[in-house]
Amino acid sequence: MSAERPYESLLSYAERRHHNALDQLHDNNHGSVDENKDLAEDDFDTSAEEDIDEVKQTLQNTEQQLQATEASYDRLQGEHTGLGAKYPALTKIKDSRRAAIAFLDDLKTSPAEACTELESTKAGTVADTAQSEKDSDKLNQENANLQERYENEQNQVLRLQHQLNSMNDDLSLAQKHLAARDEEITALCQQMSASEESLAGWPKRLHKVQQEANKYLEQLETQEERFADHRCGFEQREADLRQRLEEQGDELGDANAAIADYHDQVMSLQNSTIKLTDELQAASADLAAQSLQRDSIRHTFEAAEVKLTGDLTKAEETIRHLERRTINLSHRLTSSQAETDDLTHRLAATSARLAALSLDKDQLDEELVATKTKAVDQERIDNVVISGLSKALGRAQETVAQMEQCNGDLSSRLERLQVSHDDLAGRVETTTDQLGAMTTEKTCIEEQLEVTKAELTSHKRAHDETLARLSGDLARIQSSIPGVAGRRSPGALECLAG
Image 1 (cartoon, rainbow, N blue to C red):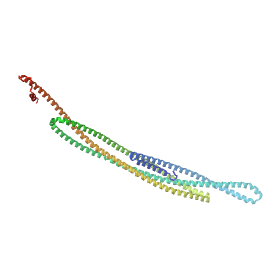
Image 2 (image 1 turned 180 degrees about the vertical axis):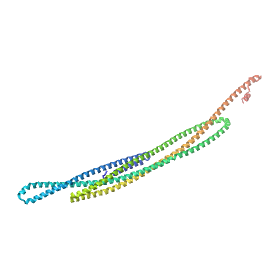
Image 3 (image 1 turned 60 degrees about the vertical axis):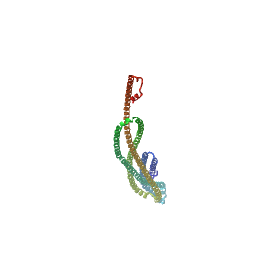
Image 4 (image 1 turned 120 degrees about the vertical axis):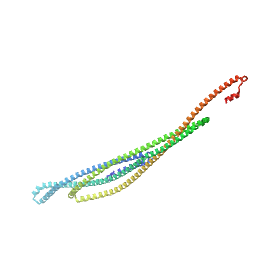
């Protein structure tokens, strides 16, 4: 992370994370789209929270640097003030010693006793003068070093001010990104509201299906009336059926086979109905799960929006605090600059000032060139970021369109399953009624067959008894007629049998 653009790596990192999440979502379209979208959104929210935490840490570090710079500036100002207080006294001592040396030089023309008397004083004065000159040179050197350190600190303050301006620009860019994110969340919420409105139309469709079911019930009642009419016809044909008992035996076997076939068909239809019912329940469960996922996504987006709003408010408060501190520091720098200018006019040499100003000018030119280069690089990065966000928005719109298409496919499939279920239910009911009618008819025929068999058995028994009785009477008659005893008349027996 550079000192001038602290948000550059953060923004590029967030954009890469966002693009990777959307690419993964686009590659996994044949899988669970809603789940991949939730994962991508959670990943983007996590990266946004990490970026905001890093921004907060950067702001805290910048504030600490400003405080350290302010303390260093106060310390340098105190040292400069102390040296300025020492300088008049040293200058006064230096002037007095120079005056003493000049006085001693004037006394060289005096008598020899005065020279001998003041020789020791002159030597001490010369030593003091040399020491004073050394102290003065040392003071000038310290003053020059202090001036250089002050200029370095002032340049550092200017760099920090430039860094703060860059951070404000980056925060504005981050606010724009958050606003775009809020717009995406609002669009997704509107789409989910539209989906909920489409789901709200299901009761009307169910009411329509109920009306169609009532129509089918009316048709079934009509068929029951027709079957009742057929039953009356069957009762009228009961007399004819008694004469066709032998033929009806074969037809009864065919009817049993047909009943078995109908039973198999009914069982297969019931299995199909159970399978379609399971598919209908699975589709309903899928729709319910999608509704729960939409609710979860909406709650997640609302929570993320609240959290991002709170973080943005905290960041704005931190920015306002830094701006107030910057204004105070600017005022203090202005007052300190006035004092420093006054001290510089009295202490610094013109040549040193010109050299320092030349160095400052070269450094400022280099910083200006570097700033322009970085501004061009930042503009290029911003263009890349805007392009990436546009692509991400397009991919998100494609994902939403795919979700809507999937929802429409599920709705149409549910409608087809509902229609198939109703049709099969009507067919099952119709077949069940037909099977009941045929079973009733079979029962009636079997009862009639049993009655007819019982009647035939009783008639045969009566016929055998009558034949035996007539045979006994014939034998008695033959035995009672002379010449006929012991002889049978086959014709008479056949007549009796007939």
